[in-house]
Length: 109
Image (cartoon, rainbow, N blue to C red; front, side, top):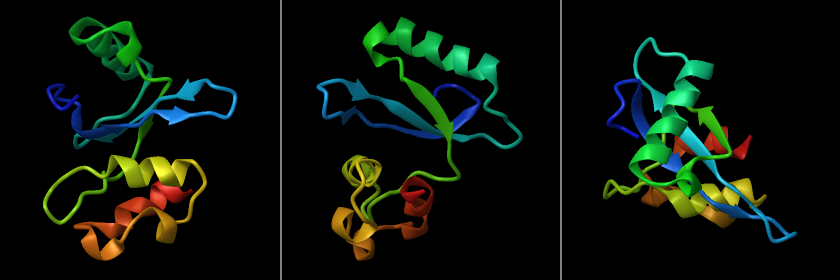
């Protein structure tokens, strides 16, 4: 997603539901002055559908202030997934291993 000038960073997770379905939200950090409006959401969906496949189009696009990273610079997909599945931050991640532990707060909400 970062190839789009409107997007600075992104993270997508696939969350399996109890009924066997899944939900796939895409979290994006917008470039300065950008707004996540309908036009940008359509552009994101079109880009993913064209560059990858329709299966890569997220169920929802959500703007967040930052994406959580490990100290070594890896995006923290699994801890975000655990938070979205209802686990506490303490059960999801070791904050001492994070470059930006405050980034998890928005996913907790």
